[in-house]
Image (cartoon, rainbow, N blue to C red; front, side, top):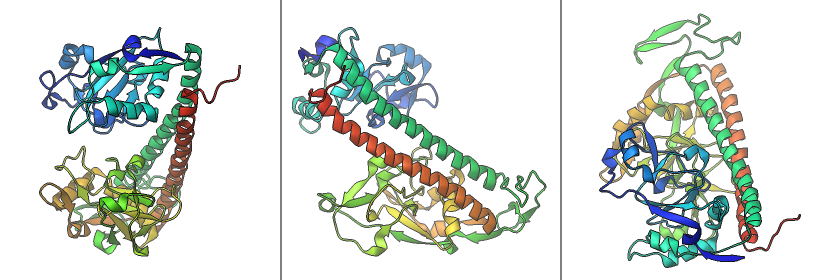
Length: 427
């Protein structure tokens, strides 16, 4: 093992401070800028990713990212870091982040990114941080961090092995994104364009399927479809109120506010563990339909999750419960569940829902307004076919999430063993 300081093999750089770039300078399109919230487990998340203009990009070019850079949270969760891949080259990092750029002739940057993931390293980072109320990093602290690294040949082998695991996880995530996109496309094609398969398997509307005017909805719908209010299609069951003590120790999975992505998919890292009391009525099962009933910020169609729904993935063992920020939607006819899930995550429904919230600092959903929403109900033949397609997609997505959990466990098991030299490589 070779001992050195981080400053001997890499250069640290803090992001642009408030005087250089303000949030008000963000634009709709341009150069992506990553902030602390975009530092994920194996890469950057792109949810709510802001952008800066071409002019600001040129002005602040020294804050652009290159492949091999490592981005840290500069304040708060300072143990969080992400390795920059080719796809993020040319992006920018914010003032709440800090960039480490390696001298690639002295150290393998991918190896170093995994070194930063060691629990012992994270604890050391917290110990050397400054700040009375919130831990903080600066370039001087980063440069003085001691490293204990093996020969370059071993660095390369460790980096290659661990990167192969993370690459498989990323590949799986892309597959799930494609499956989700496919499900949305099918919904739009069948129920917004009315091109669901007719009795001959041909697109209904294009094949001359009859459309009739509906006075309640003030638009045309396929002949034979009926209209109803949401309140007649399901009952609702709010989750469990909890406190910090009931989230301590061993418990069961609790799906909560943080379990919802804005695109209506399940966010695995948001799960809590609940150790309090609960009744059987509060237990949810795989593929149950859940709706988020709370919003912690002002309504913004691009960012908020209130009224969005997810289906419980089939990745848990034993009981699963939900927090009081989540409502279980118990449909009266099973074949309506997947249809409603897609409806709840549509833009037009989401804008409708925004009108039925109340509260000052935290917004809550008024279910009475949702229950009055009128919609067209496809015939059972179409709903049954849609249910089969969507269930197949959800089963595949769940299998991929479970595989990723196993890969993460394998990576986290190997990481300290490889870094500490307890596990080596055969010639």
